[in-house]
Length: 283
Length: 156
Image 1: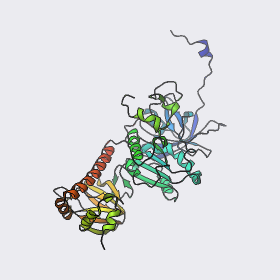
Image 2 (image 1 turned 90 degrees about the horizontal axis):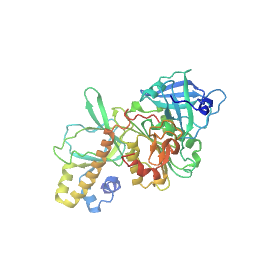
Image 3 (image 1 turned 180 degrees about the vertical axis):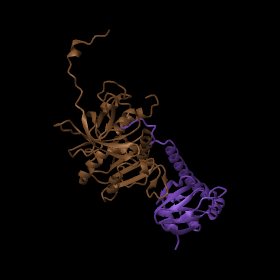
Image 4 (image 1 turned 180 degrees about the horizontal axis):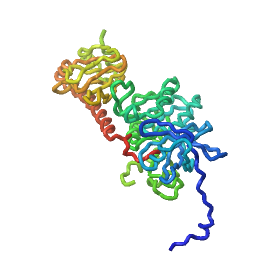
């Protein structure tokens, strides 16, 4: 029988103390936002685009982007779609419940580098929560950017997230918000169509703009093509990737994408070095 | 007043030779629709296409058990209507103005006649409509993939 080494036996238990759920909010039929409070006395800071590993007891961990405002204290927000056992358990949590949290991990949106020019934020489906902290950042420093555009696509109007906040953002004169869905019942006054088709009709300067996008890989692939077709160079297109992250600390290799480990080198990547690996079927 | 300047400004006809714009102006009419008005109804004769200048149009289909479903919206710069092009010249969807719409209506019979008389114009217009049709087809394929659906086992 395998014996644990003395070193392993002597190693202290490093599992972080669980966080507490302070509130939950249903965003759509299958998506919930959890407000989490760190263990007493801990200060939690993150950069827009980073993620935490969350785990309800006994169901394993999943990477979840932080969806709140990085500049405000208080509860840490995560918006989770119920798509599997681990996320189902997280979505079922109630105020007062405990949840395992590790993080923050990963790279972040290069918002400072984008200053002085137009910024395109492009999100599809559950991709809106990972870019929401970036929107907060941009709006808090609005004078540092030129035109700011948010393009958001979802399956149906009922699947749209943060609808109250979207309405607030749409009412601003300094933020161009365009929302489109794949299909809608009669009475819907927004757009029906796909996100990539919004690129050609959106007013922005492709020569200087930086694009940040999150969504299903197929949507991002078509959106990258649309951005390139109007002249946005690869080195100013950034996307957030998800590839089966498990350890989040570059140890397990499950999230390998070519030469990259998504948990360590991402989730936010510049498209330029990533392009050839995204188009390979084998990776 | 001639409609040539309006035709020249529309993205669909961008770069078209002036002599052809003059020909098309002979088939064109300036039209407006109030919010909620139908530009066309499924099954009716498709004798026009619309170059949208302002506003938004919803292409809808009525499903008995689901009510009307919007399958696509078209806005300024878009073209509404392919059904005039090929027989049986019947609209396949309803087209409803979801905002006040200003457009240029092109008469389908007139347009087909001009294209038949001048194959160069016909080829030029067919190329433009084909490009548009391919773009819409690709967007439709993307939606068929249902990329936002539950198949994506990811929460990040």
